Image 1 (cartoon, one colour):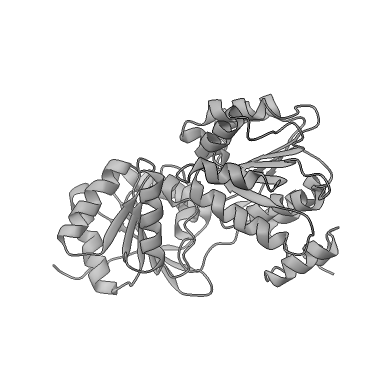
Image 2: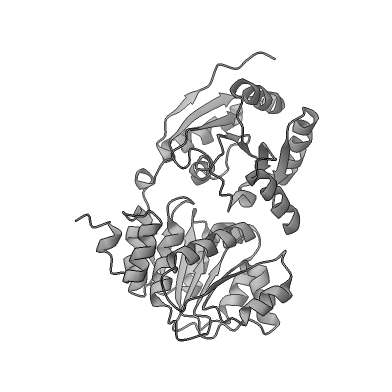
Length: 376
């Protein structure tokens, strides 16, 4: 028997059945490493990208360990964005489908707090939320964390990038420090993450999925040498040449997102932008339009793109080269899903070739130079 088969893990029949129905047969590398450790009660630092199955890596042990007869909150998962919180909550619901008496709930900004307060009266044992709303509910006396036995910081690097460090520390201060199992998942390991591990974890084990163990999406990957002023015209030429139905474009700043949206709209494209500077209600509306196919080209920053779960994206454009090499795989993993073909195009300015070399070395991918642009 394959040691990575879910059937070989010490899981309840209810969870085994749910996992089987979700189509999981073999644990991904991060799941195979993390699930046994978490079931033993260890603190871990899981370093893995989005798309590697990390949500199930912590959701399965939590569901196995929550006491359904105790109606108090026993597990807390903090996420950087509402989109990711909803995605994680959906995964919990699928995995706990056959486990009687377990409730999970998402709390986040952009939704009336009164509605969430009302739902809390149903006594969910698992809370998945954004730091701002979680802390707001604590201050209002609506969220009691004194019986939390596991706290998970999901996409910890992004939460720190978004300025949530103080909220995270204030929230964890409301949980039992001695008996709490603390879990961090992060794509990157900047010094600020390591500081958090020292503060809140005990003898944490660093579980890092080697890049060659990570599932590389089946995507045709290209790069183009493009000057800064030629980027928008090059993007338009590629869209015309390939006639992609649904595309996702990554920029590094919200200002670049807004500027490119204006340019593309002038050219008649059904385009919209997504970044962290927008109100949650506006982000929800934009995502709804993209999922329904009303928006054909979505331009986004890395933070805003967390939680985008659309299977029909045909192409990803790296309008700006990602600042962190790990984000390259995260970006291109948005296409080539569900067995469908996908393509990625990375725009490289002369100053960016050093970073391109790092990305190619880190991700061990075949990226070809794209020459066949149509003339304007």
